[in-house]
Length: 214
Image (cartoon, rainbow, N blue to C red; front, side, top):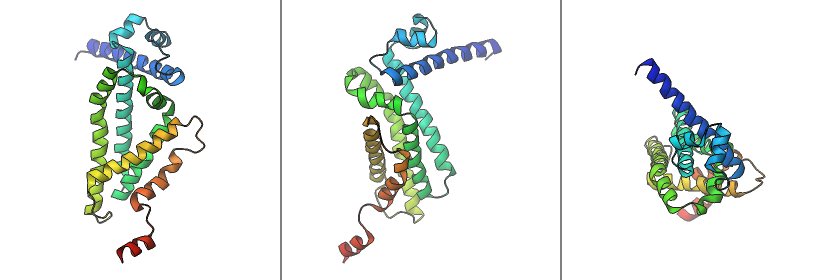
């Protein structure tokens, strides 16, 4: 690619990112349905035709933002997991990173939690097709970490995929309820240690395990 073409490509990508950044601010502040394409164009300081050049609809902007968030989240998780020394520490990194990311982006993800029922079926379908793969990758990562922990003797023998679903199901429900709360009284990240303990040790006490096995 020659310098001129490269410069043009960077300029176009810069404009696209400006539109996405403006849309994210407006969605987070006013909600998805109260934000129009014209609002986004004005906030980004572009003509409405420029916005439609990059995105054919508001729905496409929203789905692109979700995809970008999932990509960013995955990068954070992979970096934290790579730096952790043991399978147990890696699972703890998954838990803490997910809670941190959703707490930091609470206003944006509140749109998904609060307004999802109002989206058209076609938007939900597109979201499922384009974003399910990313979520499946996170489930696969957790299952791989659990297998590694079993092999290293850190975890007891379980079905790794089922355990991965249990882990993310627990995290997702915790995040969902926390985001729904208009004024949460505790930090989402503060729940990481208790959730990790619940995942690793369950709710049965050591004495309870002994009674059940006798």
